[in-house]
Amino acid sequence: MSERSQRFALVTGATSGIGHAIARALASKGDKVYICARNADNVALTVKQLQKDGLDVDGSACDVRLPESIAGFIDAAVERHGPVDILVNNVGRSGGGVTAEIGDELWFDVMNTNLNSVFLMTRAVLTTGGMLERSWGRIINIASTAGKQGVVFGAPYSASKHGVVGFTKALGNELGTSGITVNAVCPGYVETPMAQAIRQRYASFYETTEDEILGRFNAKIPLGRYSTPDEVAGLVGYLASDTAASITAQAINVCGGLGNF
Image 1 (cartoon, one colour):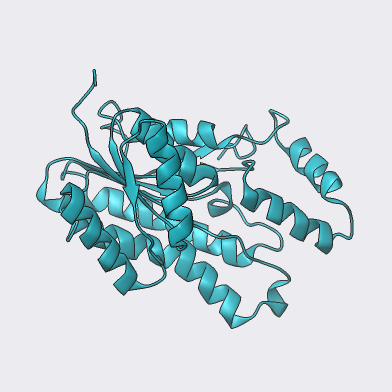
Image 2 (cartoon, helix red, strand yellow):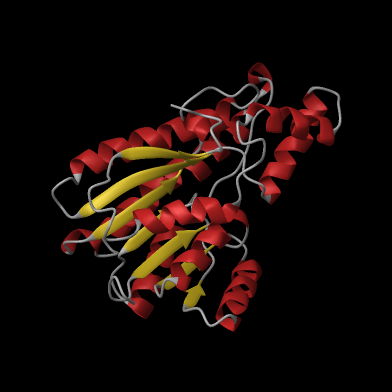
């Protein structure tokens, strides 16, 4: 590689959508990439697909809601490839509804998946993953523009992503002199399987069609369209680079102008 030697990156939730694009982007730069998702079959299929394209990708199943599952994932990654240089906390789920009607199970599962997992995975990478012992590291958390503003019928999701942004800024400041940068990428509307599910849910809320919801969402975006997973992955790739060494404790939007904050 022209910029630097090969580095080792972990990407969570990497079997579809934004996570898959990030894994491909980092591996295409020449990095070793180790991925996870809950479903072992999906991980194996994704690894096979990326390896077929000549990319240095491996992975294993991990339920990021569970500390013991994260511990096993980090142990396996370090045993195979050594200390972790780059962590991308991408895994996430949607979730919401009329707030007064939201059950405990949904609320806590959104928090455990979207927010608590970021803390647990990051702590494990800093310690067991060996990042604190080195003079270089990149932690990139996939948040959302919903982590900067409230989303109607999306209180659990919005609250969890606000938490990710706050955690990112606090840890970035804490690790300022360590050589480890910590940033959040905040996608707006991105065309992924999760985005389709969200449109279905809002169509139900408003008793209209998915196409109508898509039109409403596109109308709010200055570019007039959803962003793509590759566009989000492009920013992640930059933040993981040496050139981005002075960027830390930031939450940067990729949203077609939807959120100018």
